[in-house]
Image (cartoon, rainbow, N blue to C red; front, side):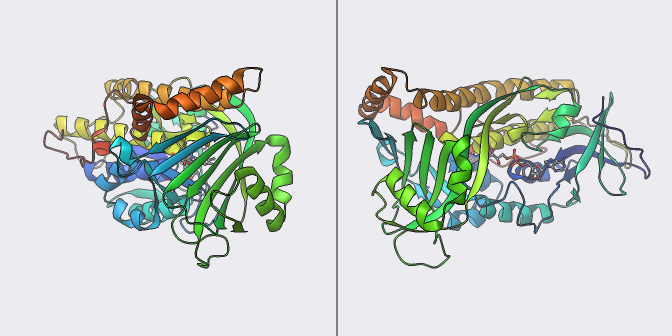
Length: 442
Ligand SMILES: Cc1cc2nc3c(=O)[nH]c(=O)nc-3n(C[C@H](O)[C@H](O)[C@H](O)COP(=O)(O)OP(=O)(O)OC[C@H]3O[C@@H](n4cnc5c(N)ncnc54)[C@H](O)[C@@H]3O)c2cc1C
């Protein structure tokens, strides 16, 4: 099976694991696998210093507590933390209606529900780490153009006149339109939400003080998240910095993008109200068409899907990266354990005796990720659909549901679990434990 065929000119580079895509999830996986001693390759289409790197743009990402733990265990959190804003309170409301709910981290025994960082901040920390992983065969910028699946390896071709890469295991971390997923014959169902997220940084007269707002409107959800530092024109005028994720119907996206700053600020003020005081400045706006993309299966022989290549979600509850990072943490743990268990009597040079693409490992990965993927995907998709439903009686039921939720400690406890994911077993990295190779590791 192959996406297309490219003749191999130079001898292949042989590795245990090749990661296609060095975005948020692929780069994190490389960092997690670094201590295993496995021979690693990473292929990333965008250059390290490319401001248009699609994964490391100006989006704001809400990182759950499980994600913070993983970054701590990878030694990356100390670089990221100073540039994050903690979410200590979440305010959920149904625009123009009476229903709302408040969640207080302290009431649930948490320091914070999560932390907001820009993707640029995460990208800078991850890129610096990629540059320092010993022995990593890093092809960046290089696009993977073809993948050929064989019984004992996958051969990956990249653009430019370079040698192919032969890997015992090829990991698709190349996003929702994954080339490797298609080459492996893994089907993905796609559902267009008919919505576009317009993302911007904005400044307002009132500081966020740890409150994140999620407001459901007839056009789609609308999130206003606390941001570290300053927003809008890059200067500190006091007040608060916010990341705004404004979901609009696809037909309205061009109109919102074409607004002048003043028009956008007025529309934002009207849609959001005055909880943040007066919105005073806004930075560049970017648009993301929203689709649910879900692979039927996350493995094929010698191929594994992680992150958006496995599932691309609506950003409504800020779960996509958190879930994708747990994919990476689980896969890294299985590989580290397999390395520990293996005798690894490998001759130098050719592919080692250790088989990173062994069927049992792939099966364990698929089984280990099923519940988390399913739970988070259903939760996210359900939120979009319930709050987008304006049939008679539904908005009222929704408001009553929000009020009951506001009064119910157990429902809030259940929500706080989102911060950790629904995996039957939390990956060791997400419990803050580094992956030890050689010992029992657990
Ligand atoms: C508006 C918005 C807000 C969001 N907010 C949140 C949030 O608050 N919290 C959260 O957890 N998630 C959030 N998400 C989701 C999150 O951004 C994604 O889940 C995350 O980016 C997935 O990372 P990834 O590395 O799997 O894929 P991507 O980010 O798509 O990265 C894929 C990488 O692969 C590279 N690539 C692609 N094809 C090739 C190829 N053929 N060869 C080489 N390289 C290739 C690309 O250059 C890219 O670097 C949000 C998403 C959106 C759209």
